[in-house]
Amino acid sequence: MRVFLTGGTGFVGRHVVAALIERGHRCVVVSRSATSPWTADAVEVVRGDPTRPGPWQAALSACDAVVNLAGAPIVDPPHRWTAARKLQIRESRLETTRSVVDVLRGAQSRPTVLVSASAVGYYGSRGDRPLDETASPGEDFLARLCVAWEEAARGAADVTRVTLVRMGIVLGAGGGALQPMLTPFRIGLGGPWGTGTQWWPWIHADDAVGLILLALERDLPGAINVAAPTPVTVNEFARTLGAALSRPALARVPEFALRFALGEAAEALLASQRVIPRRALDVGYAFRFPELRPALAQILRA
Image (cartoon, rainbow, N blue to C red; front, side, top):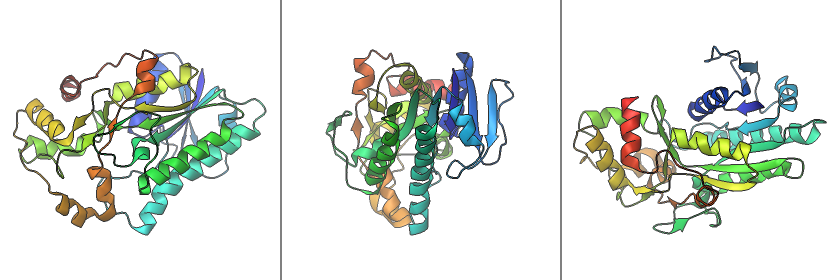
């Protein structure tokens, strides 16, 4: 299979490309810089901006499948959401997705599946309520963004299979949400944030990739929650990470400090989302890391 990827040079994208190569597939990655982190002949990098017309469109049309992961970072590194930043976060997702859908709709010989990223931010902050794929969307900035993002991807649903992967907080070595936490935790200054009772929908990078591959290979249109089956609270996450590093995890960052430093962006860290990957479990996906403790142990050994 020949797979076209946007966002392929990002943290999750690199893991997806590596897994596809390992399975014998070929990848075409669109990149603004055309700088390739891969040496494998199985990866072709096409220079281009996926929000604008260019040679990448012909490359996409020649592929068997599309994985759309593009989007500006939301809170990595942490920063306030100015009006300009919110526009960048929104347009980097919507414009790329709309451009990909336009190519799919106009292609004579088109890919048979579009796997398009969304996020568990779709649900907003819902306290202790379990959230499977049937839960309604929230109403905050990230929830409204995810609704629009998914709607843009569904524009291709009448010409190809569309699966929406609602990404949780991806943990892995060398990047992702865990990386900026390691230094403060290693020097004993790590700990929970906010009340710590909010649910944190984590997933190991290997399982995030596994669910994206599942969406490519199985007839699973609609949304799939990309989160581990055992979400934890922020208090539990901090305790577990501290224990994995043999360090205390007592330096709590209070909610008011996050709101003062980050403004509206603090909502992304304070939201409570008890996300359940119901569809993945129903089709028999076997999580490699369903529990947080062994997941962190594997990552820290890598």
